[in-house]
Length: 290
Image (cartoon, rainbow, N blue to C red):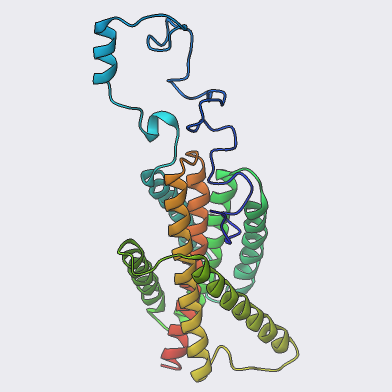
């Protein structure tokens, strides 16, 4: 299944067709596959044609456990959880540095980190191979931006940071439960509709940004309309999470290489950052001038 998510749709991502040892017996063995070694002495069951196994060898072979994902180098859910945890730790750590090191009005630092994170994110998205250092660098830059902008918001609305983090966690947990229970099914129609809404949403925000440069205000980030836009933004972030969950599930089922867990971590981080920012803006609108 080809994904519409640019993070997961790079050629070679989440497949066995990039030098990875899959189930095709005609492929060359992977260099890191401990079961691919052949001479006969290194693997007593890989015998020359016509050679016979003894009864003891047959008994030992059938008693041995089959090779699991760790032995064959395939991606597992544990890999995704571990890489996502590392990515989020880099994000939170950089956010803490920005929170404690920057002044209360750290708009310039936030803007610089956001631009750098955007550039690195584009490189990761369109890079053919997975680069863990780049993904961790993106997480750190994004975390620095979030830490700086959250400090600014928290100066105006004390406690908003905790509220936004809790709100993001609730959305993530709800989407994970809904997906695992089958209440949300990522079908081609579901994906097309969601992506169409997302493109319209981003286009509307770009129009609003251009208008604001000329002193016009469309009211998309304030008042009742701002609340509606914020709710739509959070809903789209939840939609992106469902795409991430589906791609991760398909990747594991299709025997994707272990390194693709980093790509999954990057996709999840993107979605969580989107939700957090929309949550931060929505709470700010709801709290108003209190």
